[in-house]
Length: 81
Image 1 (cartoon, rainbow, N blue to C red):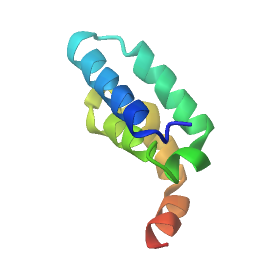
Image 2: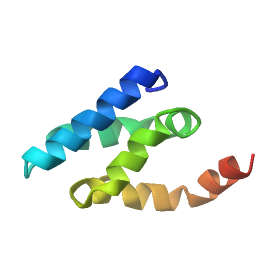
Image 3: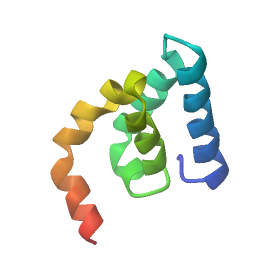
Image 4: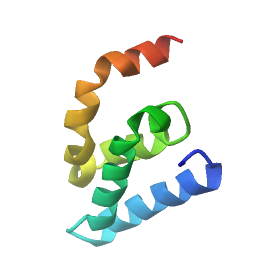
């Protein structure tokens, strides 16, 4: 899904641009919803960098933090493998 290098870089740049320019983060919100809906696929591939990008900004952190905290065990398990 978000595994292609160009696609995940594009999404990261779009998140950065939206955060820098806009108070409303509609696009980032949609990206976060898609990433969380397909969490298993995202966390195992390059899509994880999009989640990290969302975590790095105060405006977008709340969009994913609670769900990622709930999946902490899964994330730890994947990090060890």
